[in-house]
Amino acid sequence: VQLVESGGGLVQAGGSLRLSCAVSGSTFSIDVMGWYRQAPGKQRELVAAITSGGGSTNYADSVKGRFTISRDNAKNTMYLQMNSLKPEDTAVYYCNAFYYSNYVRVNYWGQGTQVTVSS
Image (tube, rainbow, N blue to C red; front, side):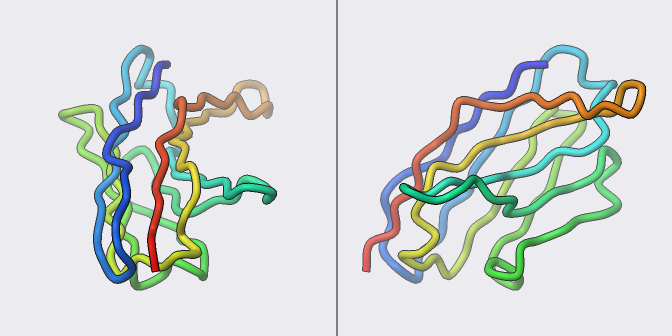
């Protein structure tokens, strides 16, 4: 499985960005996909996740009501629509996909895309 993010950039506080994650390879094996972020000096944290069928989503409290995760299985692409951005959303955003094999979680990561929100 290969993941390639795009859509990051510089935006003013209150603005919007949409991140995309293009998925290729053995996509049928994926159980859940998600977006994580890592700010300088901080641990990587989950931002949002979505199940393979798109029927269930999960968000970090800090982004609820502002971010929306979605996926288009026909295009093998996952999205993160980010609205009302705040300076504290500044981070490198990573696309993640995983599945379980014999109860072991197998992770795939993209290369990351920088999101910078200016005040």
